[in-house]
Image 1 (cartoon, rainbow, N blue to C red):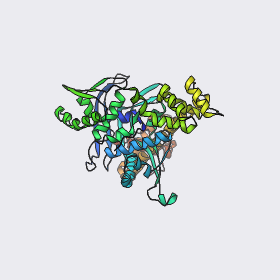
Image 2 (cartoon, one colour):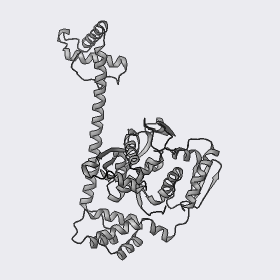
Image 3 (tube, one colour):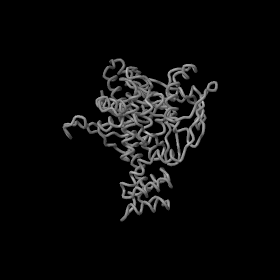
Image 4 (cartoon, rainbow, N blue to C red):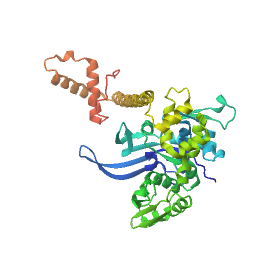
Length: 438
């Protein structure tokens, strides 16, 4: 397959950690825990870093990673990675040259949305100039909504969909924690291990001639299900051959328990060619001539040019092409409207996170209340008398000057619920509220 020069923004954690297994389609693994050593927190406590992937129908594999890369590619092209990404199953399948596998694409999107990831001081979040490691449970895709094709278009191949990344990934996209990856080269590598290794090395090789990593760490990142170095070397053999063939690495060497990668020297042509088809085409679509667009790219590079294209929609421009060229050449600061909009996006994201946290706590409270009510329905006469007595004793201790006959029945109900919760260690008593009674 001919390599296409197409850039895609890939969030940093998706590159660094084993979100996908390397096995085949029939290798069904429902849960996998990856250990990443220990870390000392600010309060001095030492915790074990680990990352768990769970899905009762099988955790995502190589094909699911390709589908995610295709979604990232579509989101990059549409500049929608931080909001709902509108797409069709056909679009995703076409990106990975799998037009015969549209049903499989839908199932893969469903798997990406349903797989649970548990981070214990592993997933990195960058926000407002600070960073922290996540202790939380999340999904890669926060939502995936399918609109039946019959409602929109009779062509079954064109099932309309919108997906949205988890808030943690959106926060990282907003704060530039991502790496541009050549999607065409990624697809051309074929081997799942080569693809994952390519993503990782692209992130690590920035302005370096060489990069080295221990075999144990590399096995955890890919991941390779072996702790024997000779097996890891053997599994990496074909991946290394692919990476050399496609000029990702020039060579490699094993040194005891490490592997050292040597990268090819960049030529001016290589530096220009990688992002040129995307950025030059975008400049042309704005109204800049092809010659000027190519000159701008050659002189100012991808990141600089991309930044000012993003700023353009927030500027009041009577002549957008002319204003954009001037902004690029003079490196204008972002407009007040752009800064205001970015701040609003961050505030919206924080509000959404807060709302979701409140919803989670509400659901948790409801579940606890339901459990307690079920237990109380099954209490024997003797148990009810025991809890009534304990509740009254507690009331007397806390209110020695008040007659027991003033002990409100509603208050007695919640005291009993708390006693039941404490005895059975059901999330302690902090979630218990006054219910409907026994």
